[in-house]
Length: 242
Image (cartoon, rainbow, N blue to C red; front, side, top):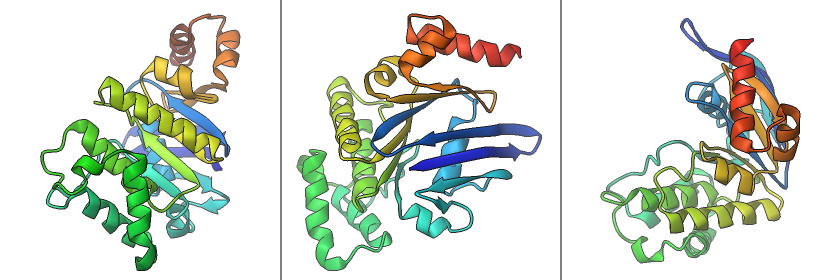
């Protein structure tokens, strides 16, 4: 479970996050939405311990991300925006390297890596250097790397960005499997169709604040909009005009 309580983060004079609070429970997919510059990625970076909040707190399974960042990182699998693979390593080597960084026992790494390679269907390019991979291939390897240690909580920042139709469908199926296995899945996306198809709960952020936090149906009812995209625009406008 992921819990965020009154997070604030500024960069100089820019107040990127202004008191964001929400919960992402186990066994559910929670979508984090908002226009560019709303504070989504900053919030996610706080959760996977890249940034420290100026105020507030965030917890991963009850572990404070600031007070015990190492333990918090061990409980999450993070797919940040941009794959960040080592280009001279093969896909398999990238995954193995991350497994070792996560402290997995050497004797069990090979089996774990093979399982994740099969799950994400990357066997046909697993032994190629990642330099020159397509966007979809890079995303799959980065996702495999983030899941190799079998984390309870998965944080995905625009995971379908740049993927083709088939790769996107495969990714959605995997996200649903993660949820159905009892994991907490938190992801950001700009694709309303994807959000409507996947999310159990949706947190919309605007101007660094939570504009609305509810199910898709609840958001439509509260905004008086039948279409989720219209509801999103309405919620954003309400915050920006206030």
